[in-house]
Image (cartoon, rainbow, N blue to C red):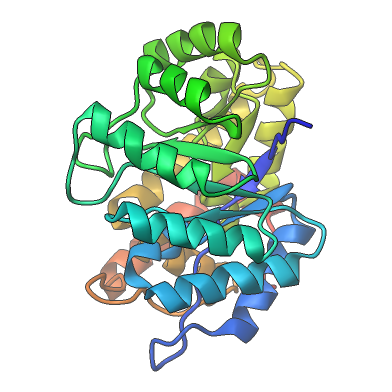
Amino acid sequence: MPFEPGLVHTPLTPFAADRSIDFKLYGRMIDFHLRHGADALAVPMHVGESVSLTDDERRAVIKFAVEHAGKVPVIAHVSDAGTGIATALARFAQSSGAAAVIATTPYYWTPPPAMILEHFVQIGSAIDIPFFVLNAPDDMAGAKINAALALKLIQRLPNFAGLVDASLDWQFMIELLTDTGRARSDFTLLAGNELMVSASAIGARGLFSAVATIAPTLVRRLYDLCRAQKLFEARAAQEEVAALRQIVKPGSIAALKAAARIMGRDCGDPRPPLLPLDETAEKTLVADMAALPAFADEPRGW
């Protein structure tokens, strides 16, 4: 049976004052996402500071999320510089009950397509659950997926379920769906960010959202309208989401954590080397968020 994740929330990872993972708070965060529109969770994604977690911590986060989310699917993020490390984490995720696994190109190495292919094949071959590939060239020093590589993965991996695209390369997305549709009718394209109207027009059937941590009501409205192909009606929600993305983009994870705190959902500061927003930047963030009409409908606190 094809696995379509739908609207996937990508939670932040909460840290205590000593910078350890606060699992009690993480449970509250998962509950918040499940109450406010998440069809599935993906943990720990880059926005969840996956690259700042030890291997043991990543395993603990995946296991905790699966157990706490119950019947809601959890997609385990297993990206790493080493193929063997990512493969071992994928096996662990499956044994822990994850519904699917996602990985992007290897960190640091920026390998050529042939090496990227083998990296993904080894990860996908190690598991039986659906395997998704994340295309995020801006985060990965330009390393990216193309349609030809996706077709090779389809040929070699029966569980290669789809691609999550954060490139905003609409021409690539059209080519991808045109080519993969002939090879695997149930292949799924998901938007890797909240610019869903354009992605939906091309054929994306799902969305990975970090902004849902701050404005889950707005993101759910945008997603539902896009899935119903009410793209004109979705324009207003898309413009507000785009404005929110622009507000938090300069501060990245620090801004998302500050915004969550402003909304009454404090999950601590980011781990070094990331720094929290300074006082001036946070005051600006408060004012910018207050100026967005959508926040009148958003939940406060947990």
